[in-house]
Image (cartoon, rainbow, N blue to C red):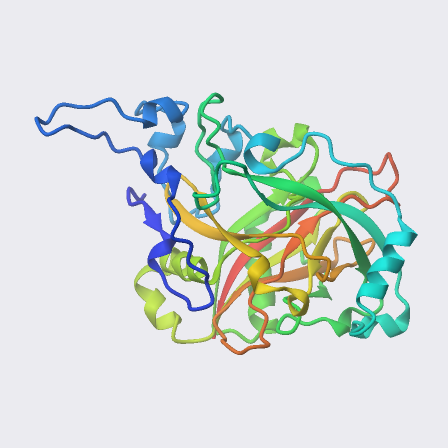
Length: 391
C-alpha cells in the first residue's frame, strides 16, 4: 500500500503545453490539517469543500495498492457528476442522420479528402461533447476531481461541455487504411481463448491473454497492464462495477502525464524503460455479440490542431494526472467501425515517446449515439485495457 500522493506535473515532455494558471484543488487535496504559528489546528477550507475529511471517510482512508492498480473505489462514491460539474448533460440532443450536414462536411474537406473517400464509405451524424470554459473560471486551470465534494461547493470540476454535431465515417471493409502511428488508432480481429460474454468474463485471465497478444503484435520487450474499465450506459450497471460510457471528446494522457504514469507503476525501472520506445494503448473490445448503442469513435491524429487540446488535471485520491479535453473544430475527422463484435478490437494510442512530426501520440475519442440503432437495442457493454508497451 502507498501513502504517497503522486503528481504527474513533475514530469516533463516538450509536447505537453504548460498551463501556469492557479490549480484550485491544491487548496483542499490531499487532506493535510494545517496549523497556525502556535501549533494549534486551524479551520481548513477542505472542511467546507470535501464531503468529509474524517479519517474513516472512504476517500481519506483508501490507499493505492500497486498489486491491484486497477482498483477504482471512486465509482461507488457520491460524486457530484452533472452538467454543472463535469460536462455530462442530463438530456442530450436528439440525434438524426443529417445528410445536409454530411454534404457540408465533405465540402469542407474537399481540398484534402481522406484516403477512404475514394471508396464512398457510409457516413452518418451524431452529437458529442467538446470542451467549453466555465464563466468565472478563466483564471483557473481546468480540473476534474474524483474525490467527493459538497454539493454547495460546486467544485467537482470547473469547466463545461458543449454538444456539437459531427460527421462519422464507417471504416468497415477499409480498416487497413488506418494505423496507430499515422492516425492514433486501428482495428484488428482476435478470438479469445475463453469466452468474453458479459457474465462469464474472467478479467485477470483476459488481461494475461491480451498482454501476450499486444506484446507480439506490436513487437515490444516488456508489457504491463495498469488498468481496465468496463463500461455501460445503463445506470443499473454502476453497482456491478461498470463505469458510464464517455460522451466527452478526450485523450486520456498528456505526454508529461504519461511519463508520470509510467513512473507511478514502474518505479525504479521507469528511467531505464523510458530510454526505450514507450507506448500506452487503450485496447477496447465489446462484451456483446454486436454493438449497436454507443459505439466508440476516434478522430485521426492527422486532423488534430494542437491549439485545440486543453490539458486538465484529473485528481484521484492517490494521484494527479493530466488528460486532454478538446475544443470543437470542424476539421476533425471522425471514424468508427460499424457493428463491432466481441471478436473485434479497437486500439487507441494514448502516448508514444517517439518524437517525430508525423508520429501520432494520441487520438481524441468519444462514445456516440448512432441514429440507426434500434430503440430496444441492448445497452453497450465493453471492456478496455490500459497497456504500457516498452521496446
